[in-house]
Amino acid sequence: MVSIRPEVGFYYALGLFANAKAEGVVLEYEGRRFDYFNTKVEGRKALKRSDLGLRFGVDAVLKRHYGIGIGYDQGLLNINKNLYESDVKLRNGVFYIRLSYDL
Image (cartoon, rainbow, N blue to C red; front, side, top):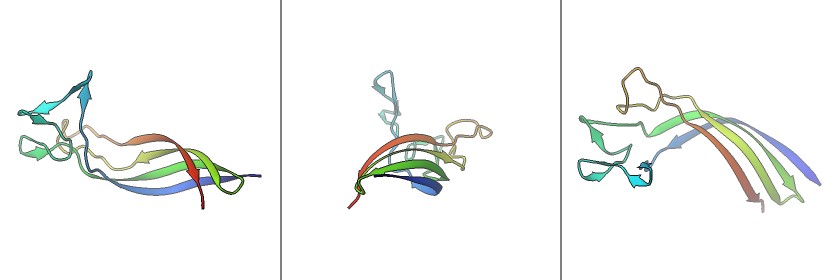
């Protein structure tokens, strides 16, 4: 038996680390690894840590225990702090695939 579970709601995310690579090379700023949340550029950090958004998805559950799902998270907050000009808005968007086992 297969059951379908839709997913709609809000999410909150807190960024811990955000390093970058360009063509396989780790980006650095003033001789140190560039961390988007912690490295200060002109006295200010590049990105905001917090994000709030909407989540949409669907799960298929097989035999009451095994699940597979897909979904999309769309950020609502502008996470640009000092990375680009102040009028540039950055928002997260994440597509995901999930495998699960329910107890």
